[in-house]
Amino acid sequence: MVDLKIKIPEGFLEPEERNGFLVTKKRKQVWAVELDLLAEMDRICKKYDLKYASFAGTQLGAVRHGGFIPWDDDIDIAMLREDYEKFCEVAPKELSGPYFLQTEYTDRGSLRRIAQLRRSDTTGILSSEYNENVVFNQGIFIDIYPFDAVADTEEQFAEQEREMAELKLKYERMAYYSEWYKDQATTFVNRIGKAVFHWLVMTGIGKKIYDYDKIYRQFEEVSERYNDHKDSTYVTAMTFGSGRMYRHREDYENLEYRKFEFMEIPVPVNYDRALRAEYGEGWRTPHAAPSVHGGTLFDVDRPYTYYLKNKKNHPVLTDEDLTL
Image 1 (spheres, one colour):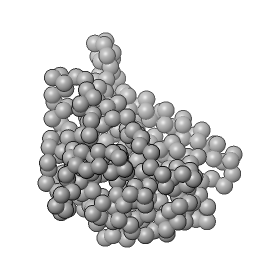
Image 2 (image 1 turned 90 degrees about the vertical axis):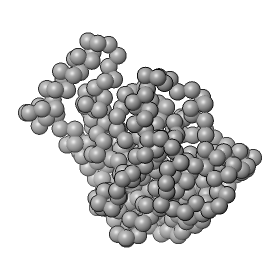
Image 3 (image 1 turned 60 degrees about the vertical axis):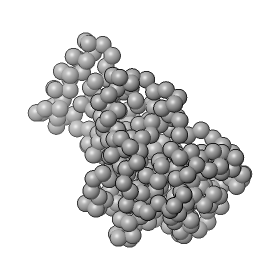
């Protein structure tokens, strides 16, 4: 297992049963890497006085389990847009290898629409992307979602969604023909065609016309359109596509730290309202569920580049590869 900055308590990595679910040593090791990433994020946010909050299953785990949901495999963080943008600005200056902040601007074509803090010396490849020949950083990660203000009227919100959908389709098409996806074509003719197209649009005047960053920034600007409405009641992860799952802004402004494994993590003071919005009235009752990622190849010993280089010898992921 890679070296971590945080100190792992004795016995933490041992397998154990939680809520009738066996948490294996491998899952614990992945958790440890993610907690190490969380500690780095927390350090930076405290230094620059930035607010962040646990989100989704991580928030549920903090409140209900005092740590990870036993069958979970990731950490989700939410930040109001102003703090998110500041974090994305300062984090690259604060981080050094193997820690890496990934955004659509650092790894064009990754198509996450959020930021991810990664360990470059580990592997966290989504099974859905394993055969897509993507070459961006795919170390173990934590997700960081920007929250934007919700429009004042349904008409404004519907127009905002429509514009974002058009821009999303546009930049995804651009990503498909960019260098990050150029090897995805399945036939020789298509690969040649994509290579020629890539050369035309990524050099000289074509690069000015075919401006991926510009289109993606327009997408974000539409998402941020109502952020000057500081008195807005609701915020949402607009760029991620969960726009109509509203959260109360004040729940992500008024926070407290709660135990999360052997660390602490911020949660809304009014966590009951936040969790009911996400999981309904029965959020206190555990129900085992599969990973929302649909399976991930995790390796805490080897970097993702090892698998990219050796894919010919291991073209298909097996159930054993995806088992934690």
